[in-house]
Image (cartoon, rainbow, N blue to C red; front, side, top):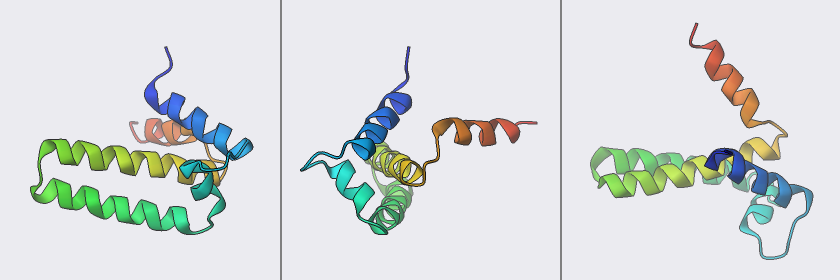
Length: 92
């Protein structure tokens, strides 16, 4: 069974290969540094949520950050497997 990260990353890669009008993901991928700004904004929102907001808010902001991070990886032609391999190498 494919996990949600693999599924979402597949959708992001599809939007990159075949941008559709009105797609937020396609807009981010075409927007140059826009994705970098979004990752930064979402990271700050995660920190703020972790500092004093509800668990629900922290989960929501974490989901936003993870989505935008996946878009950034796709924009650089990097993969989840590369991130997984890096994480695995750190477990030694």
